[in-house]
Image 1 (cartoon, helix red, strand yellow):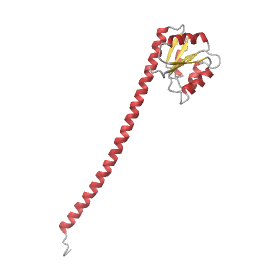
Image 2 (tube, rainbow, N blue to C red):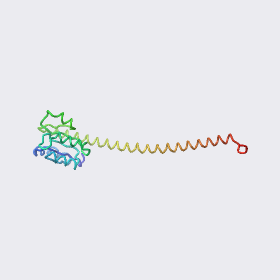
Image 3 (cartoon, rainbow, N blue to C red):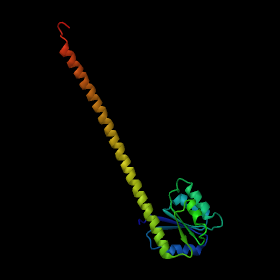
Image 4 (tube, rainbow, N blue to C red):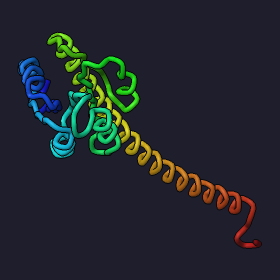
Length: 179
């Protein structure tokens, strides 16, 4: 993973942030930490992380409301969000508001690394696909422009040949002396 990869960790319990940071420190990425939903929203808008690990139960803004706000903002709507929670009864609500995945507490280091790596790889593939699509669109515009020019030149050539044909027909059927 490129060193510019940024992961935003959001949890109101510093011990949970320490555990997640310890698990993710082996990845070549920048970890950004927030202990409140408001701070996380501010950091997400300013730093545009590649992935957000988000606690569901927080005092100021719960994870679901925060996810809804992030998905409603054009700048942050594409950022995948992995919910981190001990509650498994509201998993479907997380997916409804735009969550990409879930990590359950107590945290399993292998699970965290697998889910985070999967989301970052998915993001990289989507970025590559978007890049290929942009290149393809450029090529299509270039070829369309070339075809437009070629069609214009063909029309001019066809009109020129018609004129010459009409002129030859006229000359073949008319005598300049007697008209």
